[in-house]
Image (tube, rainbow, N blue to C red; front, top):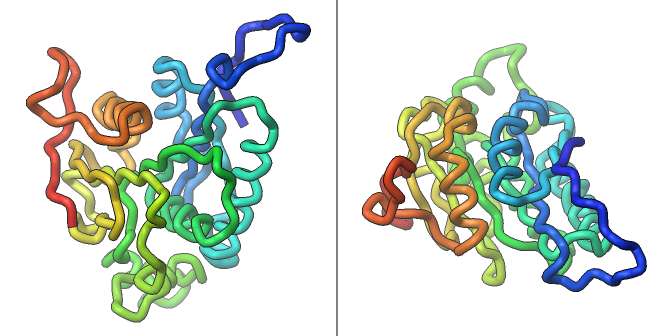
Length: 235
């Protein structure tokens, strides 16, 4: 796992909360690796964050099992005392793992959560793939967009959680309406496809904006030369 190196400090001088950096834990999606999130992590490091890429086996077990392991890791990081806040940025199925982690005991130091192209109401692509013999995995099956699927049985975002959702304009995996999460604080749309959008400056800008302010940047408020996505109505 990689992160931004911290500047050396005098160990005799105690750190206050204001002195400690903010950490972002980045989660990949199904059938991927943590390195998919590295370009986004690099951009966020330039915004002053420490980053950690959290990898997991995405085709075995269940989203709930992954969520439990994630919750344990978040508790460990928050308890370390090294960070003022611990944020989460998740892509695709990583967002479902985070929703499962919400059902576990999470520390008060958890910050904001950004979900990128999340199948919060299921994925039509997952539904099609699970019908094909040889392409079925337990976690993929849980991502179907049918009313009785696992993902559609999960509760809304907890009231204390600040969750922002980013959808991608050319997503062929998750429909726009399926990205919405009950209880989300904000929602926006960026250019790009389901995965490729991760590597754009627009996506990184919106992630950083939500982590700092709890809302996405609207087109009319964009600094010159810094593109942002169109705001989408909450649902």
